[in-house]
Length: 475
Ligand SMILES: Cc1ncc(COP(=O)(O)O)c(C=O)c1O
Image 1 (tube, rainbow, N blue to C red):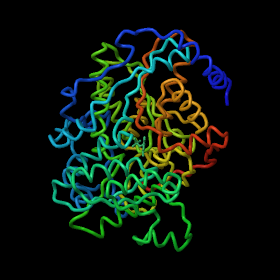
Image 2: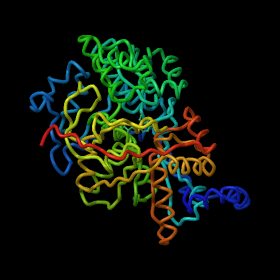
Image 3: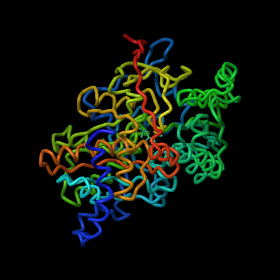
Image 4: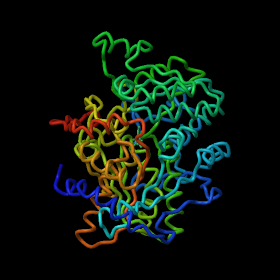
């Protein structure tokens, strides 16, 4: 534990006593902003036409030729393929999806973390977008609802996907149940064992959950033959889901949580709401931060603001936060790589630590992914977004401070963005700067309590790869 955090932890007790005595009514901006439900945006923002350069195409790994929409239609619902290849800046949110958002409910509040500010004694103002309030406890339904809707509308019968820690799986299970679509989800075995609650949640929504590697696919059987207790990984679960989908052909499609342009576009509902919320306060955030696994929640949060920055309307700084254990953007390479372990996907140009990277068993399961979204990778490569990495003990220190000051037990993933927000607020205190800092609280950690338990007992272990071998498929 470093000195500043030790000092913070010692102060927690006194903070509670003193803040009790100090409590007084606050002006309304002190609480952040709730939007009127009718202000829920009607369109998603697609950053593709506004990127500083054209996105590199996805390639056929055998011929290295660019792929076309037709190459994807047997795998993904048609409308999602259209969005993936689209240069349109805005996509209409279908009425049924807008209605489902309203009932989640959305808009989610932008909350001022005033007690955290007081505890840090910082002149900075800290806000967070409260995405933890959905029924499954994360932002994942923003795209899961849209994808389930498009699959249903196309007349498909079965949605197939994978899940790591279970946040995406539970969002998809819920969304498929709401749109009356069957779902099958491959859940990374080690996560299913660490987080049985997530598996039960998916099953409660009526989804079939298979622990991955499974006996249901060729790649799963091969891996189990090598090691009957194989712990699995997100890359392997993706390979199983893709193989299973391709074997169904007509009536099943693969729905995917992150990284693809359309998943990021659907998540911009977060940033578009936040934009209205800041406008209502007449405030422009100085710093926006959040965690990156595949990159969807953070991109969705910042892209509407990135657009304004590229148009030179604002000067906000964007900071992507990842685990030191899986340092895709801080130690990885911006190059072509497979999106899965089993090499069933196209080659994608992105920041990657290599698709064979052995992801250490950190608790932020949603951040254990070797690659990052191509558009976000490009923005990092161009220096428009910067990135930082944290060890999990530093992350849980921040999460515990947040729980004790704001009452919110955040997800291990979102706590990465929170860590940066706290460090930045401490810097502001040193420099006497009153910056406005906002992070995306993309999930709660109420089904991650075993991780908090390990941290509380001082048993949490940090991981960092020694050597990272960059993939070299395209020179
Ligand atoms: C709560 C939560 N936050 C963040 C992520 C990371 O994904 P992404 O970077 O696509 O938002 C996940 C992924 O599972 C998650 O469950």
